[in-house]
Image (cartoon, rainbow, N blue to C red; front, side, top):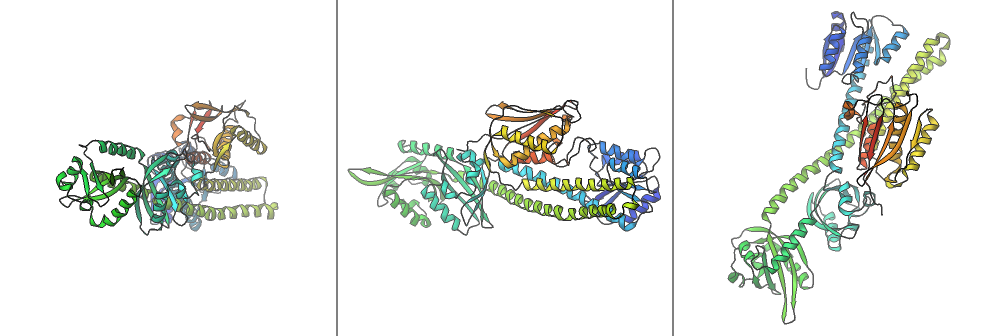
Length: 617
């Protein structure tokens, strides 16, 4: 058996039937497991990864219905599709019982080869697509968590417009600007004049990778420093920017102290307007190898590499004109010809009795550059993950299209044929026949609901979050009114005072609707169903909750609660697709919040969630 084979479990008390069925279904990429009784089949299903079970109805000791019921009751095997095989046309009531136990379809012996192969192929295809969707969504959620919880700014800038298209929560944390104010705004808005011009030049550059520093203006008018690393692709900047303000402040303090401490390990020297060195400290001697006596006979061009001298002359002119240089990364050359990386700070010294001169502070950052290179490599790996996330998004969109078009068409055909039977052959159908047709139509609608929920779940990941101040109490009462207008229920719903929230109004309508509808549904079997909606305070955060006194669940399975297709109750007890809570979790994650639940079986459940507070002003 190969790793990626699709595994089919064949269960029949007659060996000849199993051999014939396997021979009919064999094709590359499929593996088969055989069992001649129900108990052995259960052991196999629990211990092996099985994609489809073809189960004989009539078996001694334990029939197919009993086996299916046990499979559906176990969380590990409950999602394995089952096809019943019967030696005779089973009574309608018996068939309905089979469907209630979780059967997907029936095969009648002697088997029609083409129909049998077609049904098995379709079910295996759907099962594999479902597995792939679950895996991709899990990968997508992990990637989204990594990006949104990163301390570095991660985002996308359009090269043509220089506007932010996407940015993670770190931008808000560092600058104070809400994300909705950032997306669609030019990067120049946040930069000082010099940095603005520099970044505009870089946007026109043809380089595929960029690395630079800039100051950035925060919402409270403070200034911070960022180290930018950029990958250019598809006419977009994929950015990773790190807050280096504290590093800058520390370096500034060190350089300031170095100007007053002659024995500083930093290179501190002064030169006149002609470039002649007129002061040279011990730090400069250690870095460049020239003694003070040697240095006072030199000009600064002796320690500046030839390829940087034109640029250095321009910088010197700017400084003599009154400008200042702070923490400029550049290169210098030592007495022995070695190129070293330094941080360069300079300002003009004005003395009424002397011509103006320039005071310069330089530290050797060669080792720091090595460390920075390692950080750059890590950032490149992170950028690769961002690009992989984009590819995953494209694959998810392709799958959504497949679900929408490839799976809906056969459902419409089934529903249409059922209607034809009901409308064109009423005289040939008794009450039981009409009831079966209604069952078919009902199951088609359930499948359509599942497909629509899948598509909605996929779309949530692409929707932009547009936050505003929302009156949470009014929103909750509006949602309850909408639910009550379309769903009859007996629940006594209490809404306690709720703080305003700063969220996407449309997306959070869906959060409240899903949580409140679930609370009503799972408490419906109580004599006096009760639902309570309120909030708690946890530090500066507001924690909203929805509580019911319904069926509850075992906390052992709480980690499965918010996954797609995960249900903790049998479909015969409570209807649903198992996607609603996954949608809720995805919306709350997009807001940077978190969600969890507490419950006990038959004692109700409470769902808590919070979103980070934010000041839109």
